[in-house]
Length: 196
Image 1 (tube, helix red, strand yellow):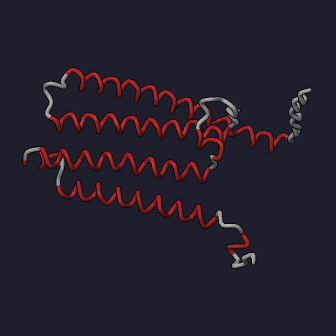
Image 2 (cartoon, one colour):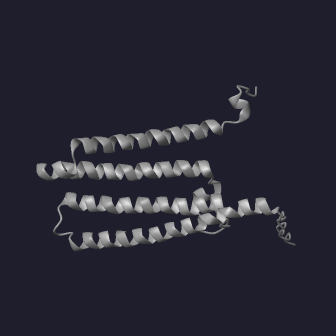
């Protein structure tokens, strides 16, 4: 005789007073923002396909370094698209409403433990990745262009500032991760109390 499966207990809905209900319902004002990001995601798909078609059509005309630059551009689009997915899915789940994806085969692994802190760290790491791609493209293009083109597009000061900004992104991500780690330390460890 097989055991009968447990039925889930109904969730008790608490009635809110009008003002708390208005404040809590204001989270739905973010919905158009997430829909706008979904539209932006569609624009990036079109951009990716356009760049891919450009690469396929000119693959025999391009040098190896030109192909590398186009591929780096494609990787850049994919990383920005990944960032959009994290913001749309994680932000909606954290700040608007539950998606109820438990048990779905395509549920993102990170979504089960996402919160504002985890989302901030993931976004910081994605921004560093995107910045790295841009910096690499700048170095490759600045090294390959003639001196006249380099003078108009990639001055030493411009490349230096791009490197500084990238370094600031890295330091900021480390700072966010350290702040999150310090804030998540259990209270007994934070007060120097250890179990013996």
